[in-house]
Image 1 (tube, helix red, strand yellow):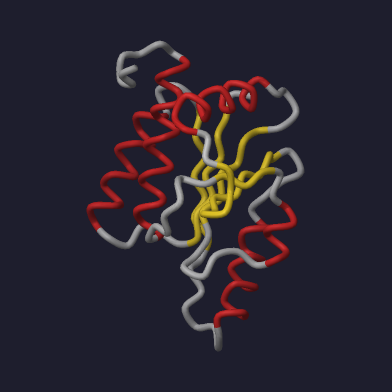
Image 2: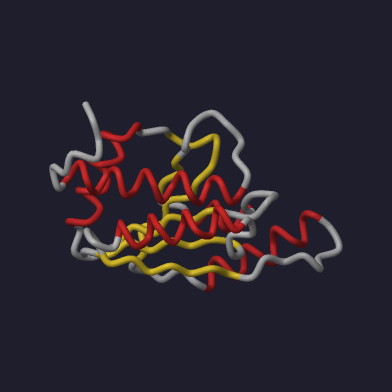
Length: 156
């Protein structure tokens, strides 16, 4: 299945991040069909738990049974660029499921969303702001696709 789904809580807030995200989505789209879904950023919740639950409900409502859900979390497994490229290759060759990368809101994921993850992936040991995590994920997906295409973007 030659499609990537990118699921984010909220739109990129900072103009530089929105511009960078658009740039990498456009570049990534040269290699694979991209579906970008931005759920509502719940700011009117009474507390952190309610916010995570409501954002989680919106995320789960955007996931289908055919999605291979990869949650981005600092506690997940970091693959490195070549490792992610190999994972992308395997995921994209699966005819029954498409990779769906999920970036949560500022407080992370509710337990219900975590239960739906097929895999948890880290962008490194750092805690990244939401906008930056979005851009780093998109750049690494683009890099992974260029590695598969043997494009010289990634230097060994």
